[in-house]
Amino acid sequence: MRKILFVGHHYHSSTGSSSFFQDLLRLEYELSIFHVDPHGDSEADRLASLSLEEYDCVLLWQIDYLASYFLRRGMPTIVCPMYDASSTLDAAHWRSMAGSLIFCFSLELHYRVQAAGVHSIYIRYFPNVYPLTPRNDSFSFTANSSQNPPLDATKNGLKVFFWERLPDSLLCLSTVIKLLEGIPVSHLHVHQAPDPGKAPTPIPSCENLHISTSTWFESKADYLQAIQEADIFIAPRFSEGIGLGFLEAMSYGCCVIAHDMATHNEYISNWQNGILVNFYSKEPIALVADEDHIRSLGIRAHQDSLIWKDNWSSFYSQLAIAEIESYILSANLVHAVSPFLPSGFRKMLAIDDDG
Image 1: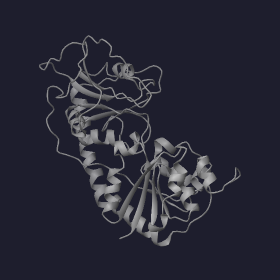
Image 2: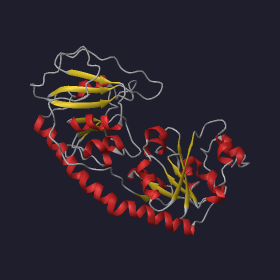
Image 3: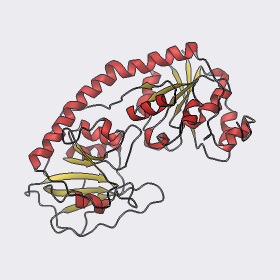
Image 4: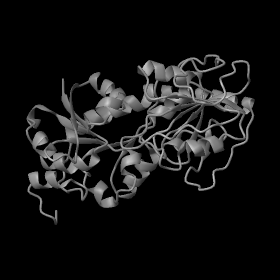
């Protein structure tokens, strides 16, 4: 069995966002996992200590700027860049990995790589899809309820889930509340677990809106239960590499409201299976829709999810394995260097400032 060294960002060791691809690889390959902080002072030394000879190739998950490091060491290198991390990098970056196998989970990123004259493979992932279940009158998880009106289980209205990851941006709680003014919402659950270094927003007083909060969930199952009971899911970031959070919400039949950028707009068709908005706008616009319309968008999202999941299982996952096997057998390595390769790795390869 061939061996692959899977090198991922250390942050993903806790989020598990690459687990689905690791599971796919394990069906055909022996997999070793190595997490790295590319900008850590000793990371180049840690990678240099690896015995690469025992592996048939290296796969880089998101940290695509290390491709030239491994190519220079003579390793066939598979790269999975993410739109949210690499969409602004210039053509020189992509050209530096011309000898690698590049998988893009975003169609927009795929086009940008190809525009740089570099070949890439577009693959569309979708997680598991479960049967639609009737929505309950309230969230079963309502820890830390705010000072707002108590939840009235007899009151009609939609339930919203919002994970506020970027409270210091325009994609924050106050914007979301304004956005929902024209929609009959009775319950807003705010998951107050912002990105590192950011402080959660204090919960405001809302006369007609019950707000509950959580700081973290006991398990992934608790989180998914809350999503399953929601009618609306607010995508927590401006863009995504894949977007597992909002894809899971669509798979449960939520109407997802998301910023109009990849990969959100590569799955969501505005007012057909979700809603796309401009969260960069300094003047938030309140959406207008009734309960039936919102729920119909969630039903359509679930229907589309079934198609996307079947496409992943029957085509894209098999395409990925076939391309990996072909690449390992015929890799033609080049030796360009990404201008974004961290200095510690450049020094390890004895590369001067001129490349």
